[in-house]
Length: 150
Image 1 (cartoon, one colour):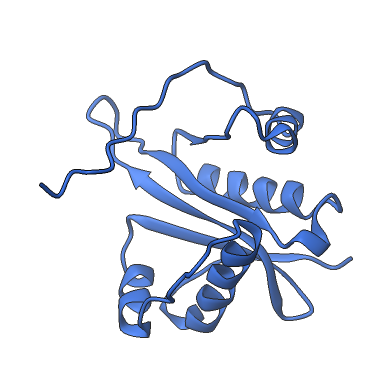
Image 2: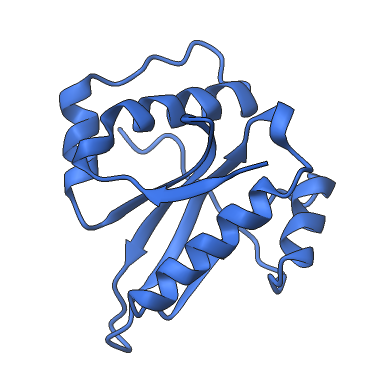
């Protein structure tokens, strides 16, 4: 299978929308409303967000959303991969490994110190995948504040 990867820029709005549709399907996002195109294009124009895709036959089949986290301890920023998904029909075919490897190369080439990804402990496939691709698990407790608009 021929897989290509790329970082999305403002010239890749259609691919960004396709990636969001992959996320919607893989993450089973109920009632997802696609943001308007001007908002999405604005996201792509910044340097704080990295959208990376895996493509097969000119279609987005996977990708990741990563945020650049500047460090106050060193010049090199860290990267937090917030979303990582491969369309279900392409899972367990090497697409995720290819995508993660290409993203790691991108991070090295751009002098990012490290990147990290969270996985729900009960998501056995994700945990096994990240271990198999060289990720080192850390035991952390995440606290989420959901009602902060008060």
